[in-house]
Image 1: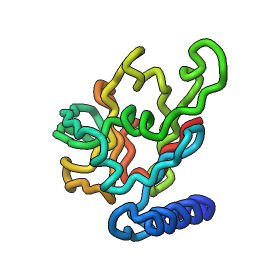
Image 2 (image 1 turned 60 degrees about the vertical axis):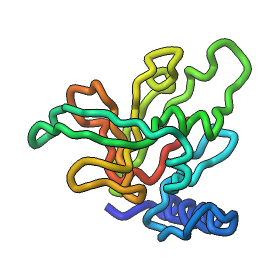
Image 3 (image 1 turned 180 degrees about the vertical axis):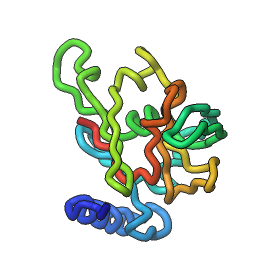
Length: 166
């Protein structure tokens, strides 16, 4: 499935901004993922950004549509990246819990998570944006969302291109 035009434009614009701002070595447009939406600062999820938060390693074991997947992955906790970007909340009690995340892969596959699943004050799941591990091996240009504890890997998104905070 082709990437929607607006996403291509957004990724290209963010790439240009990252290069102009000196955010590390230039990346190819297809290698850029972004975290945006209801945040104070959109993040280009470059290798430098991912490595600016502590690395976390997890083991996953879940069923897929074909077989069972077991693997060891390293990456950035999604919560750490959300904190870095800064949630924009409306006034009121526990308004942060109204946020959801829409995580989209290069092929258009998308899943949602609630902030309450990630926030250490609530469920505190170690949801990972992995950049190393697995088969074929991941890299900062081939990110994978992993939700430990899921019995089925349906929320495991390969080649993440966008994380939108709603």
